[in-house]
Image (cartoon, rainbow, N blue to C red; front, side):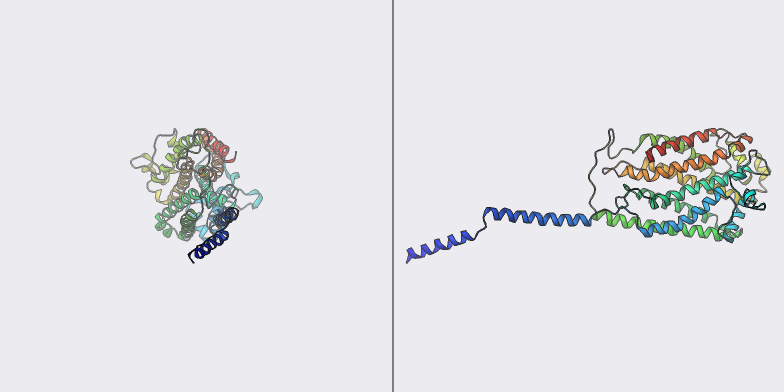
Length: 407
């Protein structure tokens, strides 16, 4: 009996061994697991693909908000003084005395209508070419700032990706610029009410606030969703002499550091200390006299204060437009400094694409400023103001930014 039970156990062991999978079946099982794992990972990767396009609602909001301000800036640059938004626009233009150079009495063909044809080569007290220059420069500077928001979002390149944060510096600087613009208009709100020009200022404040809040919301949404859920790209191989903390371009940084610093110095004076002579650059007093700063903001204790102190309150609109011009130039300079010094190469090379978003528009922006200075060169020279060094500086910076932005 014991012998038969042992035989029965051996048969059971043999049958159990035969039922076990062979090595080939084991390897096929492993391959099946690998295929399942690969398919699951590919499905995860398909879910984690980055979205290169800017969200369509954000583009629509920017087009409505910055688009309307862009049209006003285009008007100020090429048809200074023309009313395009009805009574509220007309009230603001009369407050800033911008209608002094708009004349349509001789028809469309013969009238100057605030364009570049209205620029005269000789400056006189009657034509006030310095004030005309300030309004043209305001139009150019505001056109640059609003174009920096519009065109990179509307016409994005194939290598610029929203989900990878290539637009983040642009959106952040645009928010800061809108907040500065809102605060500036709020500081003049009492004056606008007295001059019956507050409707237009409230419109500009409203569209700037809506745009800033929308940009902030989409930027926060991208930070909390895209950054967490989307896998990072492969770490790149850096160019020679570069690492993750390197500046994208040392040449651009040096150029912007020199030329933009001079622009910031002059624009900061015009915004915070209008009419105050700083002695640098040369002929600063002639610049202040030509642009009318001594009339709307005579320095305390100066001869100009004794002469213009009584009529200075009548030129509050000239002071506003001069400070608005300085503010737009400072926003433009702030964006140039961020692109040159605030953005680094990064471990994934995203810094290069972030800079390209800025440099392409900034090169065109310097070209617009160069156009305005060149158009008023003869008029400024008649007032003993030499703008050749302005032209050389702006031209050199525009060439460097275009070289690295487009080539």
